[in-house]
Length: 152
Image (cartoon, rainbow, N blue to C red; front, side, top):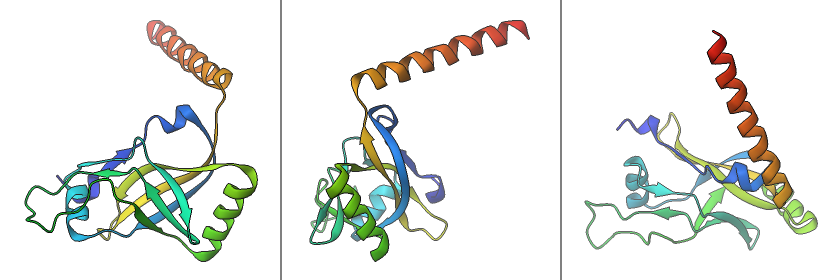
């Protein structure tokens, strides 16, 4: 697998949350973690971000143990530090504390230089009626596409 083709998504996030701001953050990893990510063995489906001593950490991000490692392997569910500018960290921390918003990872990828990056989003949780509206819009779009296809 080409390392530049690694693209691990959090598909549920768009349905569960309303996105406000997007950021790209680096991740502090150990050697076996980056090797497992390059094999595509990671999941960000249940993960979220949290502040601890003015630093941002991603919680519940699952990176499987590297298959060719010995006893130096990593813990699959450990907290991982996210690397952002101080200005971005202060802005995010202020938004999270004051407005009750949350930070959700949406995409884990490897950039051109071979570094693991995480797209994070400042988000607000959707209410049940918002979710129903999203489902209705998606179904209407699908039906409209079918009708357009029949007329071609």
